[in-house]
Length: 130
Image 1: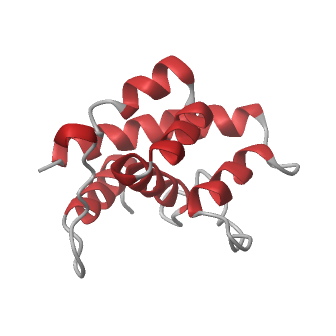
Image 2 (image 1 turned 120 degrees about the horizontal axis):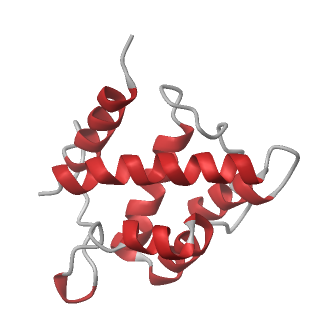
Image 3 (image 1 turned 90 degrees about the vertical axis):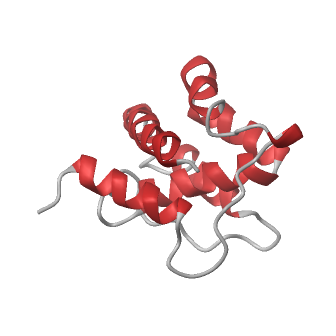
């Protein structure tokens, strides 16, 4: 059985070096590193406001936050349940935001756990960034 550190490291490496397809750019304005800014935004503002910010910025911000939520929903970790199918015209991040805001499972405890796990995973994303 793998421990959390192994699971986080594997998913972070898979994000930056996918087996198939193009590696993510995850760059911001003026070629700035998004991964160095998002964890600080989560600590100071919270997971939901940072996700909303990433969605509004698009590009690398949205790409990284989507990767974080995919990790949180992955069966190896399962901090969050599998998301429902996106509604028509909805971006993927909207679906993840609804996991933390809608329904009986959207508790403050779940949000706290997701925030802590997101920060731990982002630590690995930052360490393995090219």
